Length: 278
Ligand code: PAF
Image (cartoon, rainbow, N blue to C red; front, side, top):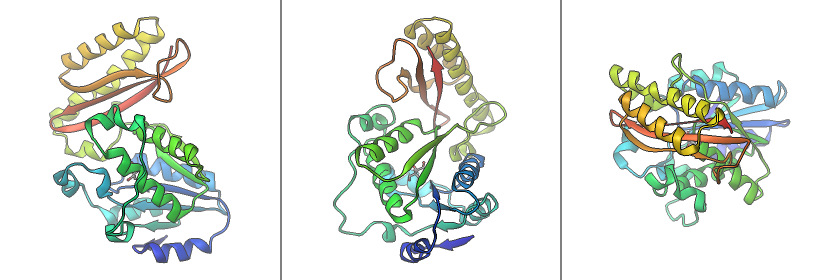
């Protein structure tokens, strides 16, 4: 695996590659969820194609300097995981290589950027979309893969690519889960053992809400029961537990929908979601 810290050096290397290119963008602190994205990228690119990965802790998507400072940086271990799962080149640039001091233009996410995660984290999705747009231009992939765990992020990236005619196919990959169903996240490492146990209630309650809806309960009944179950299992600080359409729009009368949750457990914000058939 080639490894670059300079975007100019990476671009030179990239220009010499032909065939399908698949990209996985990350902020590091990698886990099995990222490994699954990279393995799928390898399958989609084929053995003659190219798989690129980036590690960049994007300051523009953090609204809290302490959170940015505390973000785990594990570059050496991350590079091993990427290499072992089939990445051809890793770009891990410095912030001043990605952002010029006099930058003025950003990507505006529109109304979907102001609800759910966007309501609690103002400016977050403008930061995400701006850096994803830049990384798509720098790496020039045919395909870019993102996890469904960050469902609103995935939906907004799909919208950006469609609305702004990015010549790339955005692929979403199912959430990778721990043995008890908890969605893998680099944040899970910050949970105490007791909080980790309580956090496992989140995917269980999502499954219960989905089952209740499929069984014909009303949306209100299913979500009320979900809130009660979260609270009973020690997840009391719930930001939202909502049902939406598959594109985060209005709930359809029948067919596929999404149930999404965000809750803080022991000071750690956790998000999760799952598909529901109504
Ligand atoms: O999901 C992430 O790790 C980040 O939001 C992303 C897509 C790499 C942009 O910084």
